Length: 428
Image 1 (cartoon, rainbow, N blue to C red):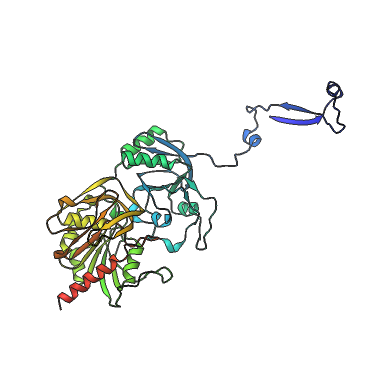
Image 2: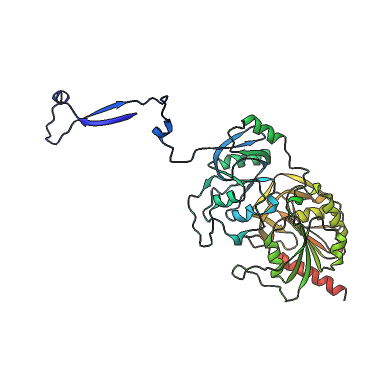
């Protein structure tokens, strides 16, 4: 519709009398424009100055969530989990344990600090996609080298925002983790996307083989002195540790190096016999994605190593140790994902605030006699740590390296050092 203004006619003004000499009268003439004309209507109306919803998240329960896209585009399927961390989204994006999953951040404001190379936890982003409430329109951090949207786009990772993350989180807490399909393709119907979500499953899938390294390598980098905080218990002695890469995070390796370890990282399929030929002082079984029951080859490797050298398992490594000892693992309703989970050390009574990321847990009732549950998650009472002195092993279900934090559990690396030191003294 077009409108024009003009001075009122004398006939119009004669109908009304105004006492004020400053009064002015105007006429408004309007006429409509037909959108069916041959001219392109977009040139008449112009584009909207704001982004409109152009993406859908379709969950296997039939719910459809419309949102705005950022990062990459296309169609992707994955398991939807929520993470309660307030900060550290870049560490989450590059944590290999999130392979095959859409990560929904409960903290509403994401992207305000941008991204930088120093906070990478692995060589690439392994998660299926990112779901957030509000995407920051600006970045403000002295370490920022790239904006979040550009970062995801260059790594072919999809993201959506302006979606009700609180409502989705409540649904996940009530119904458990759900398979979802994220799509920006208008050609795909809601029914097609729903069928995709119902025909895909993450249970029983070997996700470790897609995130592990291809060949052994040496790791030497320690935590940067600007960020290191714990120097207790370090005696300058070097211990050789072989680290099995089931999806290992860089900060686990940095913390071990900071505690004086020489580290050899090996692939998930590396034979136990080859590891023992290296005569390591200890072996680390790392974190990793997915179902521990889907990687029986890894369980067999663990069985062949435990009892021969000191062993430390983290997250997936903890679950593999549980199975190798004869215990069982099970899939949790919605798992533990976040940097604010309280854990109690059963031995000392000390409560630690921990960073966690797992959908499976060890059933402590299934473990043989002699295996000690050392840590308990205070949110649900699940097993969060194991020890078996006869087999020279220890494990944690959560992440003691915890970058960007919390750092309550960092001392466990010192306990692993003491375990290796004790073994060396016993053979002298």
